[in-house]
Amino acid sequence: MLFLCSFFTSYQNSGGTFIFGLDENSGFAKVGVYDAQDLQKKVMEYCEQMTPVVRPVFTVCDEDGLVFVSAEIPPVDIADRPCFKTAKGRLRGSYVRVGDADKPMTEYEVYSYEAFRKKYRDDIRSVTGVTINALDSNKLDEYLSRKRNDRPNLALLSLEQQYEFTGITRENQVTLAALLLFGIYLQGFFPQLGIIVTCVPGLETGDVDLNGNRFTDTKRIEGTLSDMLDDALSFVRKNMRTATKIDKETGIRIDLPQYPMDAVREAVLNALIHRDYSFHTEGMPIQLVMYSDRMEITNPGGLYGRLTVDQLGQAQPDTRNPVLVTAMETLGKAENRYSRIPTIRYAMKKQSLPEPVFVDSRGDFKVVLYHKPEIVQKQMPAFSDEPFADIQDEKGLLDFCRTPRSRNEIIGYLGISSGQYALRRYLNPLIEAGAIRLMRPDTPRSPKQEYVTVDR
Image (cartoon, rainbow, N blue to C red):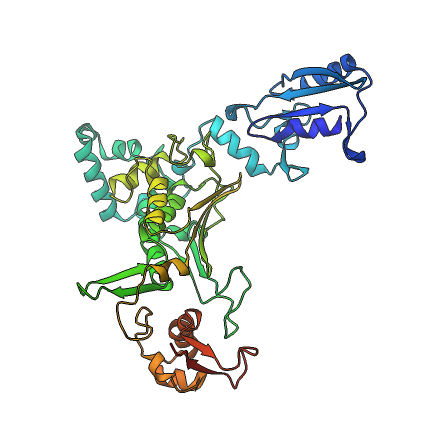
């Protein structure tokens, strides 16, 4: 009965079915049950020890003179989760299924269900010790002016009442939402409520580039939600590669970025306004990592409420942070029309890139955007007769390296004080594109390494 116990207390979206009468240790050989009625009675006794009580549906069948029993376990509504053993209590008696094992739920995993069930409003929780002076008065006044234009009755209220009705204050205390939207320095109160952006020169964290760097660029982005959105997009533009083609007939330049910025913007905005802002996660920043083949944007807190990954963009979701969502709409940063996921999908499809991948867990939510260099190349017919016309080479390294050059020679030619930055910014992209090759490919970090342009 231990296996039955662990199942009932686990987090399950769709319930499941137990089959009694198979011996798992013998390759699930058919052995039958000792007494079908007694088995059902004991299962029911255990089910009644759960909160909420579980009501299994039994089926009994005979085969080859053996009796088998199945117990179909219905799913538990999300408003009643987690299902736990009453005697142990919700925190100690709740489990989550991980592979073939059952692991105790973390305090946060239990809290996430409770937050939905009790409709906690963590985005407007009061921040002790913070006054209205911690907010940018100009931005706040502009926001309230916009709100009053949309809702004339709001102007009839006192300023203090306007603060309360728009979520700026709660019981006369400044809210977290107010700091997120208009804080002069949000991270002075919540140092980790930012975005960590990183470029990794390989497929996994820990990979290094030709110069031994684990990160080609990294930064901690701070400020208000609007500031962080703009700065994150700037970081992506700076670090992603953009191919260019010139139409020979029209002379029009066409830029083909690795990732469509519409998709990136919606993914980052989604992370900022839908992340969990409870005290459980206030020490967890959003992570944006650019790998050589993909970008991952991860925010604390999984999908909220009843929404599942396969329903994204198709069903109206429950909203974890309604004040933040409506405020960003008023500020012109979000549409609040449940179009964010469809926009990401459409932007990727329009650029012939793979479908975005969405990964949900109780602890976080991740958006993965892949790029395909080979697809970019197919979209870039050689309209120019010049070799490598479709590759960015603003410093003329392809001509300079027609004669093999050392790192120091290239750094001197580029004339940039930071040698590592010069190589990372201008040389490495040409190596990755196959336009420049290493003279000593078996020893890429050799001090005698030289680089030469590939003939076409």
